[in-house]
Length: 209
Ligand SMILES: C[S@@+](CC[C@H](N)C(=O)[O-])C[C@H]1O[C@@H](n2cnc3c(N)ncnc32)[C@H](O)[C@@H]1O
Image (tube, rainbow, N blue to C red):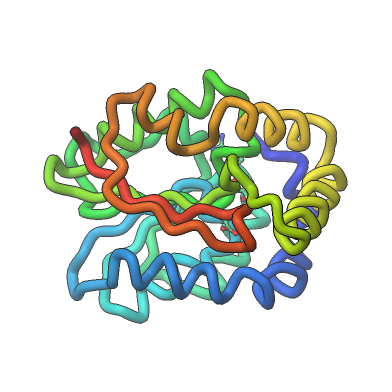
């Protein structure tokens, strides 16, 4: 199944966003530093920018995404060694207890509430019992500062231009409390939370309860 909203986006995604997101990706990798041989899965991996950091650190990297054009860009970055799969994240083609780290950045907000829960369930299934989950997404409680508000409007504008479904899922994600509420609903424990982007972005480290 193709993910139409990302068919054209793949060509310019990195040029448009990596300047802004580079710092966030580096920070996420500091929260769970890469280790040689660590098995890492990126759910909704897009162009593979976060996986690239883990691959350089010696990890065995896998990525799953619905958009083949996004995966093509990821492949050009990560090469043949990366296991990239065009599949829906609600049905991951991996056995139980496979990965040391399952990460996902800027993906959950764009899908609807039942799909978010289904993706987290799959994430928990493919994660090793002592594994870690690293989620990067919009944070529900933006600060009241001017900078916080401006960043919020900047993000909202980008979300608006990503299409109506994407935008309304994103609003719904925030109104339901974002990652913290979602994780709690799935029985996951949040071990660490880092809020950046003037209060608008969260990096969350979770473990199975
Ligand atoms: C906003 S992009 C984020 C990409 C990347 N994680 C990043 O940090 O730049 C969201 C990605 O999720 C993918 N996606 C959307 N729905 C999906 C699904 N049901 N299963 C797997 N990937 C999906 C899209 O194709 C897209 O590449």
